[in-house]
Length: 428
Ligand code: NAD
Image (cartoon, rainbow, N blue to C red; front, side, top):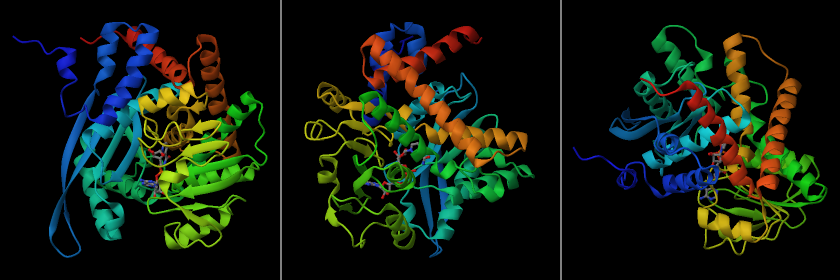
């Protein structure tokens, strides 16, 4: 019998897309540094399980369209798996698998009793009518039903999905089970058991990390300039909270365009504009800037809050910031990572910077399971404590081991899950 060796395994094109290779190279670097047991190493390399589904939908014009959907569980050592659902034209098995792996590290880093998962449908949600989107969401949920459950795997919003999509998922799951099960998803509306503070949580977590980084670097937020790529859930709430802290948001962008005002943008007005017009375009109190130039604007804090692979070997030499806060998942490629490190930019890695979302998702899941709801101040306070504590631990490892913050965060997470795997042993 021919044994499938690891190297050959990694040539398998299903998982090993460029983004998965990126996630894996981060893991490899940390595993090398930890001198991780090779048997454990193999177990982290591929997702635990993955499902691919075809989703037939009746379009408004009565034709039937078939979409591809995915749900991947990377690891479930610490508890049920947890991770968002992405609706985007670039969704693939490799992308979802990379995002699932990052969720594993993120949950462990925050001390949450979850493994990592991610899901998605390859579609352009903005090109679908509301009814088409609802049918797509419901059929996708029905197709992945053997894979999800409050004790099994708990989805949440990600790029292209929102509270409404979560409400349809919760309703579909509940209808098929025969009773209401709000704790099947997080990031759902408050009216059906969502948590106060969940919508803003990822942005708030990003801000708590930036404030800690500033404290470490001897900076104060007052008047510091910030550039944010992406003005969706994460980007807009990061902008809003940072401007409340006294920072000056000088540029933001979305998929179509960017806005620049060296005197600072009025974020509340901008949020209202986007609520009304969906996109940034047409906002008058700023000049236009493209996404490419935006990333290279001189600023104190640069926050990529859109998609992955935005800071690459092509532009890493030209980004001009003191702090790079990765609000998006995987915005910096490994080659760019090295350049950022060599240039002395203080990086807050994605698995730490954007972990506020899954932390309040955890609060939402706990509240749902207990049918007992907390006050918003309580939620925000607990969020701040957890994020600040994790930041402190990562910084401590970074300083004592003389490694960058990404390596420190990965080392902490992997060690935690590796210990748990060793304690549990290998079945059978
Ligand atoms: P979203 O769909 O609400 O917003 C995405 C934003 O990025 C939009 O403004 C969109 O126009 C913009 N965008 C898309 N493509 C772009 C491009 N090529 N250039 C510039 N802008 C572009 O999504 P979100 O929930 O805010 O997620 C943003 C990032 O944060 C993703 O990487 C996601 O995985 C990550 N994240 C989200 C959460 C969460 O709770 N929503 C939690 C953790 C991490």
